[in-house]
Every structure is written in structure tokens, then in C-alpha cells.
Image (cartoon, rainbow, N blue to C red; front, side, top):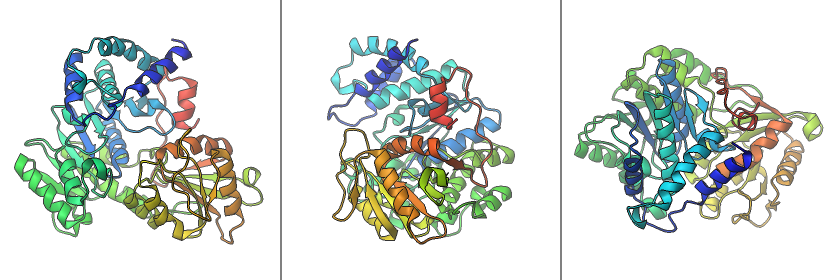
Length: 454
């Protein structure tokens, strides 16, 4: 398969759009039925405002460590499309994507069910993931939902063994509703009748809605007592002792508090136990390498910066709640490199992070989409490389022991910045991280570099 054919296949996928059509899981249901696709026997879905990808990755790693051939579905990717679909820790290849798209184009051209259910990008990628899981003999899978739960494409995947709701904050308000309670109901409707659910939400109003939905569906609900204020099933959510110790360490070169990692780890631990994973598998899942751009740290040496090494914290925080969590993880005095998509809550995110910053550089979050949230006094440089260089120079000049740049606002921005950081610096491992999984033999060199940083 030529690179041109692979690129053309991805271009076709990206061109599939709802074009303003209604959000409905009927698209995915029709597509999965047309392709005869069903999930692996032990499949879980992860919904929520933040932390979905991290919890998905930890659960998949834990199931794999327990001997399951496990599929993992993530959205979005950071650098490479191949990040979205993996089996046994091995990302897919663009050649496989191109093979799937070849058949997908024929089906799309002859789509018999009308425009209201014509699949769009997310439905096609979900179908590709299930197709890969079936082809490679996966007997377990963890799926990260896209937007919400009730109308998300993952709602069409059945049967499920477990649902996880990480948390609920204001996000996608134009789609999910303008209140926490409305958003909570939409996300909780990812639950299935009689299927256990795990929840990490903290707000009383949200918990009331989630509990009501679970009761309506007869879904046994397990709420993280450490997040919700005590009581409940502490043992289910307790972290293995070695993981607890590692999360308590400050880390090297500007340690982070890691409260987010701790909360996500509790949810993954509970979910894995409910799925029958033993304690060794739980610990292995919680010590899996973090996904790209989730409080990921790079140290850039003086040769790449100037006279002092600079720590760069790369995070995809793109909503106010995620920004608050990020601000609580990093010591003030950093330089903020910020970029957000125009349709997102960029100004609100910027206002949460900027007050703790010694300087702010704003750039475009995605190629061809000018920044829409720069304020008077912010440095605005549309070119990613130039913006990063400016932020590093500002950080180096700050009177702190460890000059730090925080990159936030969008995973799209992280995807543009991360290759620059990998080329110029060293990714710092966290105290709990085990070695990165070996890529599949068929993964292209380009994909290995993008996914693993090698």
C-alpha cells in the first residue's frame, strides 16, 4: 500500500461529516448492523468530561496484563491517527485503515438507509475499531466515548459489561445542555439496564441525577467515596500500595501534584476489579505509560533553549474544569503557551490559567484556524514553532529555580507542539510508569515515532 493511498484513505475519513445533522446513535447502529460488527465479549465504555482517555488506557492495560486480548478505542488522537485504535497495546497501521476505507467507500456510495443515518467520521472510526478487534481476536475492549453518552456513537455498541462515568463539568453545553444536571443525565444515559456502572463525580446535584438514571435502568452504581465525600465502597476504589507510594512522590525536575492521576486511577482500579481482574493486573494497568499530552513533561536542555534547562508541561486541557485541575497541579510562575479552537471555551480556559502565569503566548490551535481568544497584552504568534520558541525564551528569563512552560488549550495544539518537544528534549517518566509497550512489527516507522516518540 503506497503512502499516497494511505493518505487518501485518511482524507476520506476526515471528510465524512454530519453537516449539521442530528446527533444520534442511530448512525452507528445502522453502520454496525450493515457490517455485522459486534464488540468483544467483555467490553466497557468510558464517558465523562475529563479523564476518559486516561481511564480507558489504564483499563485496557490492566485487562491485557490479566491475559485478555484487549482492544482500545480512543478519541481524539494527539499526533497520529493510529493512536485511536490498538489491540494488545499495539496501535493499528495506516495500511489497515486504507484497507477498511476501501470497503467503506463502497458501502457509503450505496448507503441504503437514508441521509439521516449516513455514518460520519466518528461512526466510521468506531466501526473500524470493532472490525480490528474482531480481526485480531480481541476478547475484551475498552471504548472512550466521544461527546456525551445518550446520543454518542458508542451508545450503539452492545452488549456491555461495564460503564464508567469519570466526572461531569460544563462542556459541550450547546449539545448536551446548559446545566450540570442536564449534562449529567446525557452522560449517565450511557449506562445500560442491569450493567454495573462506576462514577467519579463529586457534585451533589450531579450524583443525584446519575443515581436516578442508574435506578431507572437497574444499573448497580459504584460511586468513588474518596471523591464524593466518604462512605461507600472504599475497598473497591483503594489504590494498590505500590501505586499509592508512586503517586505520592514529587517526581523529577518540577514534580506535579498528580491529583488528577490519582482520581483516574481509583476509577480504573474499581472498574478492573468489577471486570474480574486480579490485583496484579490492577497494579499493571495503573502503572501503564500515560497517554500523550496528559500532564506530560519534557525537559529541554540549555543547548535547545539558551542558558538554562526548561521544563515543559504538555496538557490537553480545553474546558474550564480541566484548566482548574491543571492550574492546581503546577506551581505558579510558569509561562503559558495557549491555543484553543474557536468553537471551544477558549477564553474561559485562558482566564483560569493566565493569572498564575508569568507570561502568556497565544498561538493557533490547529493549522488553518487562527486563534480566537488572545487578549490585549498577550503575545500572539500564529506559527507553532515560533510561539514555542518565544514561550521558552520568556520562561528562561523568569526568576525561578525551574523555568517552566505550560502548553494547554487543545489536544490539537498538543499534536503540533509535541513533535517539536520530542526533537529538542527528553520526555520525563513519572514515578509509576513502566516501560512503554513494544510497537507491532507492522507499524510504520513514521507511526512508531508519532505514537511512541522513538
